[in-house]
Image (cartoon, rainbow, N blue to C red; front, side, top):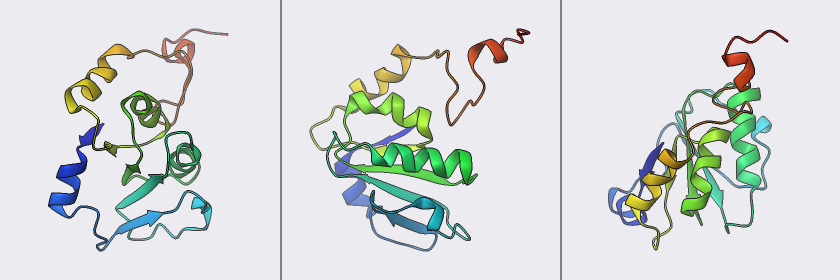
Length: 132
C-alpha cells in the first residue's frame, strides 16, 4: 500500500480533481457510479470511527471489479491501514499527526490471515490446496 503524508498530498495538489479522478462521499453508493474512464477513486473517512468507506472499497473491488487506485483520505490513522489494504485500498493519505515510518511498520506486523478478503478472496486453507 502506498502511504502519503498529509503535507505531501497538499503540496503535490493530489487532492485536486483531474481527469479520471472521482471523490466519493461515504454516504454515496458506489454501485451507482459509472466507472468508465475512472483511474482513481478517493474515499473519505470523516472521522476514524466512521467505517463506511471500508464497505465502499470492498464493493468497488469485489463486486464491481474496479482495477484502478482506491485512495483513503480524511481521518486516516495508522491502526486502520492493514484493514484498508484488506478491503481494497491501494493508497492512504495519513492524518497530519501520523508517523510515516510507524505506519509502514504496521504491514510487517500482520502478514498472514486465515480469512479471504478483497485482495485475496480465498481463505488460507483453500490457498494451501487443502481438500475439504
